[in-house]
Length: 197
Ligand code: HEM
Image (cartoon, rainbow, N blue to C red):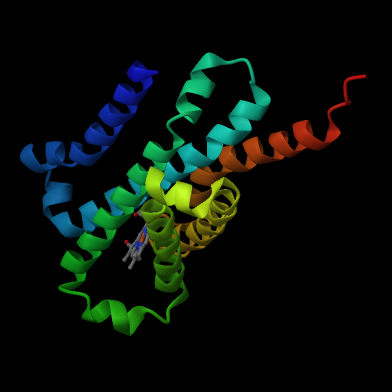
């Protein structure tokens, strides 16, 4: 258990610090526009963390006896908070890239920005309601209901990524297709598995 938690913290730390490497090594493609590079990098990392957390429940349904899946599932909250942390960093570099948040208010009506902002607002609500104290106050059932919003955030992020000029739809398919397959298999397993006598 502790090893898995340590592993997740290590992945978060490596994910957070990785961009320092090409910056320190003087990678010219990165140095041409570091703010844009960091904006894109942390957007992708946040999305991958969110996809990881959403993959854990289907994996648990498909491999109920796998100890590794069970152990990662116990730390879903940590992975989810990691996703929020990277999304916040993405937003910070958006502010650096556009020279402040005034452009943000001008662009908020655009579907690309609106989908990102709404997804971010959902992740924010989920992150601040992740403390044990808040979970106790809300009650397990309400907390679970509220945290189903994460699926809404995922759908919004499909739009956010697909509408992005550079990588767009192709990258979005690479990112989200494995999750979609896992969810379909999970539904199949849950609803069409013959019931034990
Ligand atoms: C807070 C509101 C947000 C704003 C203002 C915002 C803004 C942006 C901008 C300006 C880009 C770059 C577009 C380009 O290079 O043409 C971008 C890309 C991206 N964003 Fe966001 N974003 C927001 C929220 C999010 C969230 C919450 C996530 C994920 C959890 C996310 C994931 C991504 C991804 C994956 C990309 C594509 C990166 C790439 O491959 O180049 N964004 N976003």
